[in-house]
Length: 315
Ligand code: SER
Image 1 (cartoon, helix red, strand yellow):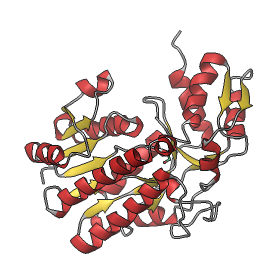
Image 2: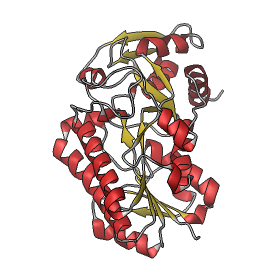
Image 3: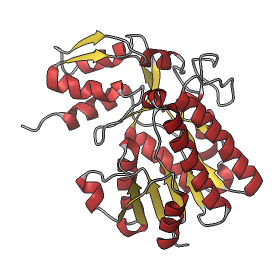
């Protein structure tokens, strides 16, 4: 089978690392990176790149046909904090891009779709700890509503039209290569930059806001693993719970202090506190572990060390 992959939203926090990993696995010329804007040098020079507005069906269809794309990873989205400021823009981007990709698959123009969901599908009425795969879902954010709706449409397209769509509910993702933008869990990346630069961080979440998190390498492995699993192993076609670690701002601050004893933390919660308060603290991901062998590798200790080692200015 001649696999050709398109990544939509390749310049974002996840897209950048996913593009690198897919190029390494399948070969640079098999992977087409695309985004609405150009990205960092390594990404632009490492293989084919196209400018693409994911909400433009005809532009997407043209790109897919020209490159004979088989697999699409749809990583373009507006995240939770920004989406609260631009609700209609977020809804249009998050939903129309998904419909465009699902419709291409329905019409047999592509074979397989990856679309990420999020812990944001849950809400304040959801059980907070070890949140089950199937539970009460009353999301209270624009972003969460778009992700929950997207999950329903993915399952619908799978059942009704046989679309091979696969999805995981990412927790907050921690990485050093590309900054996240506009999320509520972004503090857990920013804290490392500020700790090294200023020895101090002002957190926009309170000290006890425990949230599910994951180191990027785990997230990328989960993404490629679910896409490469035999179809019959992917039993859930809405989206899989995916867990790794959970910590609060106070706990990550303590871990950073084991490396940087002078590090100081201050708390000034803003509108993002209410978003964090509506999300789970930890996730039961036993379905992903059973169905397609998901296993995380990085704990908070390892993540902290890798982040500091990689962001440290070189001597
Ligand atoms: N990390 C995302 C956010 O904070 C959640 O999916 O918006």
